[in-house]
Length: 202
Image 1: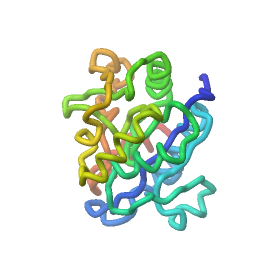
Image 2: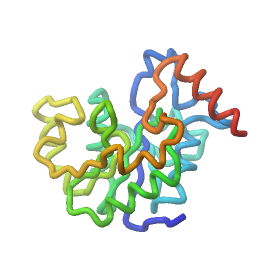
Image 3: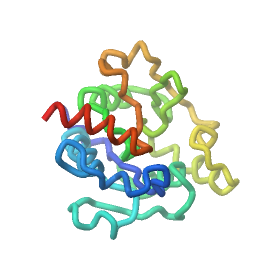
């Protein structure tokens, strides 16, 4: 597995977890909190791993955590914060609630970004672009910040005007044998499913 010295990785964990009823990032999966599991997945792949969220909430986990510059702006605000603090040209951004991501897939995604001339590289699933498992160049920062100032909150709307390279299903299906690669964990039912799938691999 190759670690890229040109990529900073970020885990977004600023949501309210209202559907889950508790902080989903701290739910235990495969023997560890979901957010710590994500960090351990990213550590071998990028120069550094930073959580965008509440530092007090995750202080006991030993992670580097930065708060959102402006709370309440959703994932787009988290991406803007990540790009502001990053010192790397490329930035891998993942949501904390994607328990089925794999190192092989993320390594492939990073490698594709490093040779891309686009501003951002987004996989595309049946739901559309997946901006919370994507790689953003530092040059995205001004346009995303300007979108937030205009009141834009939907992530894909905030990327309008950027040069986006998408990865269709045909290019990532080999990494998704279970059909769950981008399935997020929002509800207790999702948590039960993820626990059954991942704990079974222990």
